[in-house]
Length: 346
Image (tube, rainbow, N blue to C red):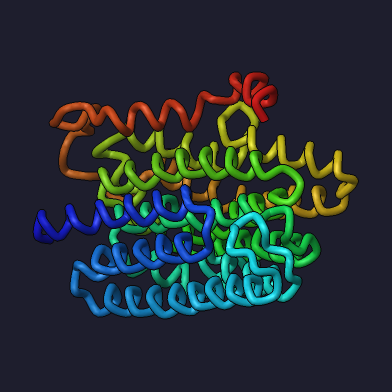
């Protein structure tokens, strides 16, 4: 890709995200979302592979439909109340339309169909952007309008997302699709709590982005795309694969690691809100996700390929240490002891 084109798309992504997260007016928030959508499309389709072109078209159509619904929702609200402020969404139809639009933007069930396909058609770095940076503006809009959303609809969508993300991830062999269903499952956890504690949703999103970035960057370094190649990569980069195993277990939410923190806090808050049944159901559904994370972790470190390789095991890569991966990998595993400080701030 041309360096100037890459610079323009990167700056546009930054600009679109900044406009959306800093705006109070619906039109400005919509403009930021549109800039973001148009900026990511060249990055999805840059390989010119038919699958990449298909992913770009699917992404464009879904995001265009979601943006139209956002505009429609805000216009109905302005028509009835005279308010264009993001925090003044009071009309019931507008609230329903906005919830639907943001669910489409994020890929919540039942509007999730596009997300695994788009991730599968993208490169690993673009898939990382789609899973983290592109989710930030819609999450911000949900955060600002959380007091006017429909609790029953959001809770239903959240539990359905956690269930489907777990079930559909079980039989996948493509790692990008597994991480797409993992993202859908985590979005279920974020959306179930947003009405009761919006700050906790943001915290969950930040920690999820950190852990997902670790996984994607390690996979990008080892050039691993599917389960059959993840076994062979162990002989080339044992330390990176061991780190990948810990990052995956953190993403699954196992206790000594960072990923346990948001799930623990969400279950705690749901119990305080007398939503014990919802908390129990979503905690049980996270076991489905734990299964495929364990399968990935098992493949990455414990399983050896059936045939031995012709070269000696390299206990280090023949290049400089990748400092960003080292930093975010450490953060994605070791932040649990900071939970008392986070509890005070939340």
